[in-house]
Image (cartoon, rainbow, N blue to C red; front, side, top):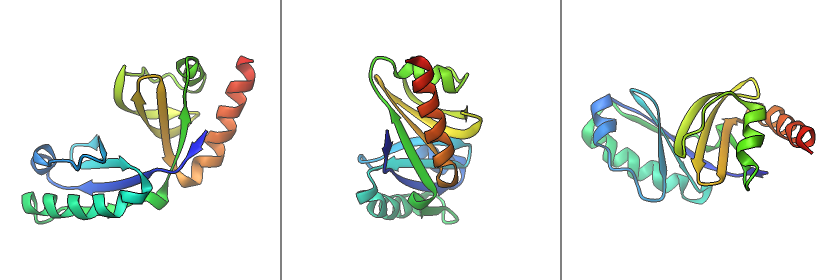
Length: 142
């Protein structure tokens, strides 16, 4: 259920973020007009932050890029019942693939959708809460 995830936060002018070539080992999630989260394996988060910082500051000298891995936790929902389990946790409509953000288990979250796999990202301070809510939702469905 729980998994480690790398997260790089980038803040820059919207045009610079639009023009950014995202490193291939990261998945880009636009969370605001001037903010982007890059989700990756934790082992490459430093590299992703360096590459993104170099590319982004060439487009916007005031850009800020930080490895924010320590601030995020992820819980994966997989299998044919992942959508049903997620529906017990949130009213967010899930895209067939991509990214959505909003309330999950009554806390702010980012949700990455890839086929039958959902990865829910929350602040590390909320990981225990989300984990207990996922467990309760699983038990309610049994």
